[in-house]
Image (cartoon, rainbow, N blue to C red):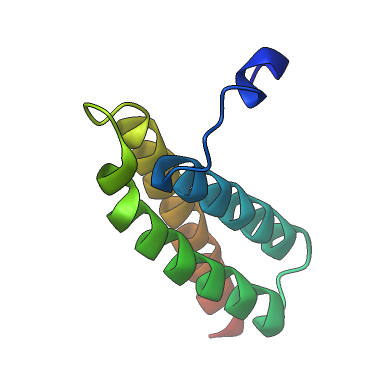
Length: 93
């Protein structure tokens, strides 16, 4: 995000969803760095919050502006978390 864009934020549901997905991204990245059961669980909790936020994002958007990008970011992070969980399962079993 460019600096000048931050001054345009309105704290809409889209902004909240964007922030929630960013937190999810950070949680997944941490889980990759420290793939413990606790870190993966935290990432899964963050995923639940992000999914809920993205579900409500269109309510505060004008013409779905920003919603698609947030949905794409959520899908990417869900994929990363799923991949991490598969790696964990294959090393445990």
